[in-house]
Image 1 (cartoon, rainbow, N blue to C red):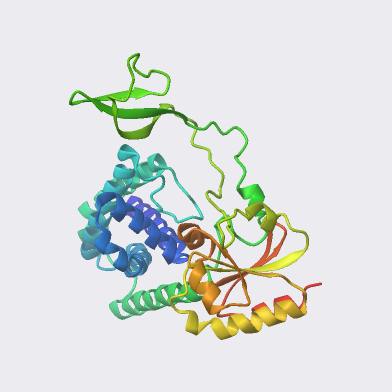
Image 2 (tube, rainbow, N blue to C red):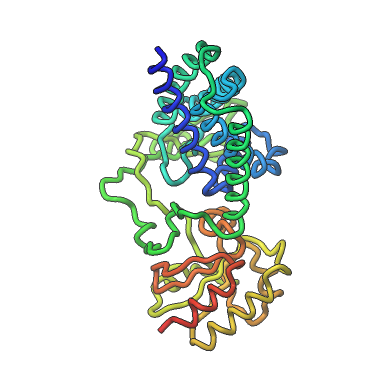
Length: 368
């Protein structure tokens, strides 16, 4: 039994450490996933706290994983892990059975799991944690209290510091479709073998006080002006296989609203694309942007400023070429505001946070 408990401790501990570290690589990604759940539940007031919750949860998962492996204070941590896995199982179960959440974000964007896979993983962990919970009193710490506390404190500081670092410098490992080396046009293509949902437009009308529904192929024979339009919605007639392009809804528009996505990504040669979701903290980086823009111009490198706040950007940087992009898309493409993309056609040659100004200048000067 002692050997079995040791194996279970290592399995549970490593899974929690892995889960925490993968999400700590991109705490904003988990923050956005939390917001997705809160939006579905109508808990909009929690959106301002999701980043703090994300950082705390990631630290706790790593610390709890280490504590389980060394067997430190197992009565306490078995309780905490049991409560946590019950909560996770509820979330993944909700994602699976409601169909309102596509992925739970359990292992971040680096290892996306379907709701079914996430739910199965949590059920597996729940069983193992129940065994640890029932046997907590039999497990003794492999380290003395002072050594265990020192180790857990080091883990807490390191994991926390790492998350604050990536919030400024971009994730250590970029698992997003906008990462260095990717061709954005290829990422926007429908994958081979993809079967989209087959949809039917359902119209809702009212006549003689009664609400009627019918699709575009089955309008009533007596349809006339006495029918009062209420609403319309799409109904899934046949489900597809769920395969989608890795990049959805990436679209660039000029200030006048003209779609320029194909023209930008199809242009020959290299150019600099600066992605900034908003200009809330523009004073922190505007001087650096001007310096980088001048360096790019000296290399005859076109510069595009991509933002959801186009009017403010045009007023703040009157000499810059500003194009509009959806804020949600920019949250994925550029975790840090702003992020500098050195592009060649549709290919991302380099992707760098604004805080690494000297690195960006050096990359631009080395271009041929």
